[in-house]
Length: 87
Image 1 (cartoon, rainbow, N blue to C red):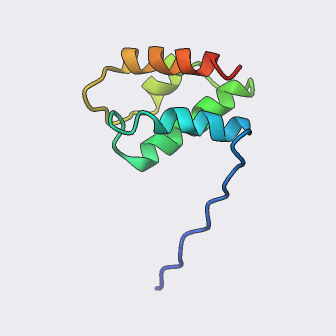
Image 2 (cartoon, one colour):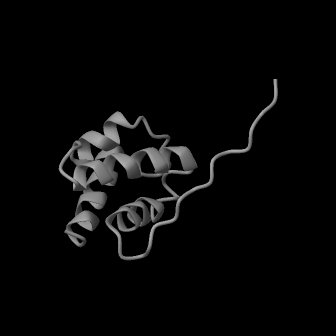
């Protein structure tokens, strides 16, 4: 059995909603050290911003993130404040 290379990552332009939401999540990389956790949370928050997903406090809790030096509640509050700036 062989392993295929991973699919390429599609980059969005700086002014898209996707890029802005993922950048917010990426700003917490010291608190969320695992890249896949950040990507999963970014996707959940993007769905929220498009009207399909759960709010930040639910997304943070359901994502089962490995957090360092911050609580889920504080992280959700900070993310919610940052999301308000892009609405």
